Image 1: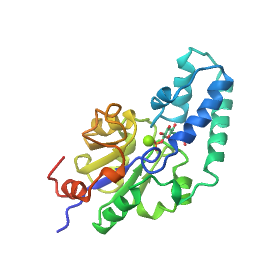
Image 2: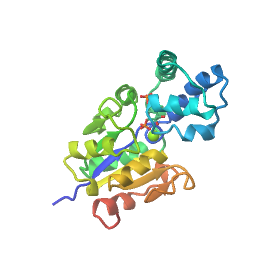
Image 3: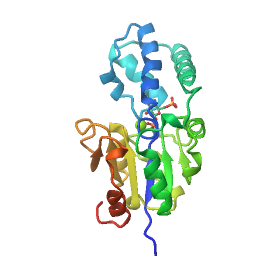
Image 4: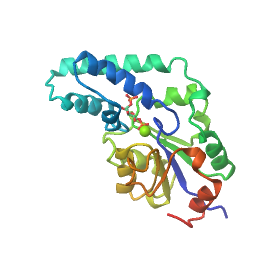
Length: 222
Ligand code: B16
Ligand code: MG
């Protein structure tokens, strides 16, 4: 009998390096409003919904705005962000991701996407990896943003697995917290100092050995 686990991947910053495009698009809005917005501030937006991201940016300098203005900036940000995605192809897949996805497929492990982004599907299509996913849960499917575990709980359910049988790969603090709150195994992708709440942290997928995946599948770690 094959042992199965649910492997749930965040999108931005884990599968593709779109975090840099989100940053550039938000920076334009911040500059327009005279708000200082740095890469350090950008960490606060990772895994966070578009609406909440704008509130965080405005909050950096206590800028008050009408709902009408906020709606306008949200549209502007997304339109600008989408221009960065036009030429996106498989070259934007982060190092080590393809081999891991292929390995999980070989081992017949269920795979899901758990992303806050409302642009997730077109990104998966453009980069040619949509077919690797047995379930997709994105910003269009949830009402509670990370660190609420809703997105990952729905993903696990769609794969027919319990939270305890689920492993979440995440680059954001909010996402790691969501996985932990959901009682899943959290694997941080990025800096140890930023993602110290994760059960495991790897700089990127090239640092994850198949032995680690095998141990997760066979429950030797967790
Ligand atoms: P969109 P993830 C998140 O995606 C991003 O990390 C976050 O920066 C972004 O604001 C959010 O998606 C919403 O994205 O504007 O495309 O709907 O990391 O959860 O895959
Ligand atoms: Mg992310």
